[in-house]
Amino acid sequence: MGRRRFLETAGALAGLWALRSAAPGWGIRPATALEELGGGRIGVGATISRDNLSVVKDLLPAGTYEQIARYGLELTVAPTTTDASLLVPARWLAVSERNRGLAMLDEQGQLRVRDGGPWIGGFPFPEPKTGLEAAWNIASASWIEYADDFSYAGGEHLIRKGESYRSLEWVFAGISTVGRTRLEPTPSWPGHEDELYRLLIRYVAPFDYRGLAVLTVRPYDQTLLERAYAYAPTTRRVREVPTYQRWESASGNDIFRSDHNGNNDPLSRWSWRLVERRPMILPGVSEGYQIDPWPTIAGRFPRGRWELRPEVQVLEAVPKDPQCPYAKKILYVDSVMRKALVFDFYDRSGRVWKTGTHHHARVRQGGETVISFNHPNHTMDLLADHVTYIYVDAASVEKNAGKKLEDFWTTEAMLRAAY
Image (tube, rainbow, N blue to C red; front, side):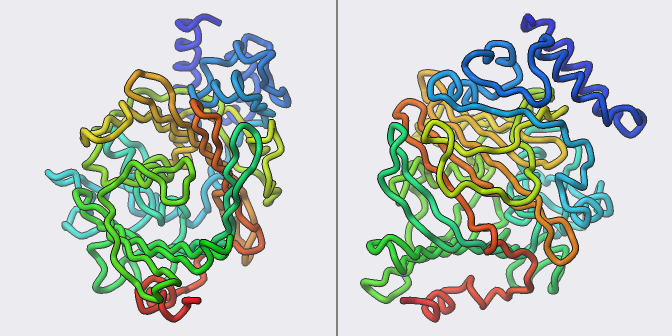
């Protein structure tokens, strides 16, 4: 299929998806849509590899294409999920609908409700009209995890040319300070309305990392960098650490401080543009938590559910920081999940330098559906053949457990838990 014909077909299918509430037959449409977009050579159940990659080139992010073509990634295509409650927890969808139309951006691009206060929960812009609105949909930990608090244990493997040479294990926990929808206090934690969230990572292995902990406090004001505090076992003290260096990794992995989840910077540090909306093949949400602690494909990549997503927001960000090594990044945001499922970072010569891929899992906890990410995810330096493979222990996933700010997310709590 030529590029022009692909765009015409993709546009028509995206239009049908936008009208899904008025089109009861859409539930069976994506299977035939995939075959149409793939020229009749790719359908549900097919495995996309180097052999048939050219057929679906226009349906894939650039970084995903490169991983298949150069490094042997293979994608097995599952049926398209059309039930939104299987992609986003039903409670989150209900809150988003209840708060629809209450969000606005002020003159500085800050998200507010119309009375001027911080956001109160759910997706602020279910149907974003600008790049900045789409970026705000993915800016908060509560929106990343659809939860007021969460924690899980896991780790990462560093892989060079298909061989793992170093592994780290950690415990990760987060708490939302605004936009809280499930647990008291709602919708904000008193005295912390000027924060978006707090995150804590504590390393448990290997020996040279054991006991190291880092607490991050993300301001609500999107012109300000986060504050970070580190506990080092050798000093048995917590110290504030600088966060202005965005373009390096503390652990030697492929993820710069700026890179997490596609964007870990204040939104004001990038210029955002919503380029287009179109169908694409992206990671879906796997049933259960069939996680691979080690990569199973080409020594680099996880298995995962991939499917035709009928509408993907292609979000481009150009850095304002002259020290940024990227020329731009592209985030591929599913229009139902409002998450960046794949993101590509381009170097200054225009090549895709790094690409990140986030898989998700659907699990049942306490009688309700929980969507969990890190199922697993990986970031690849395409130029160096280096992969950071992140996994999570399924049994450790905990969301909306009623944790208090003082339980984990203060410097005093860091000292209490110190080795």
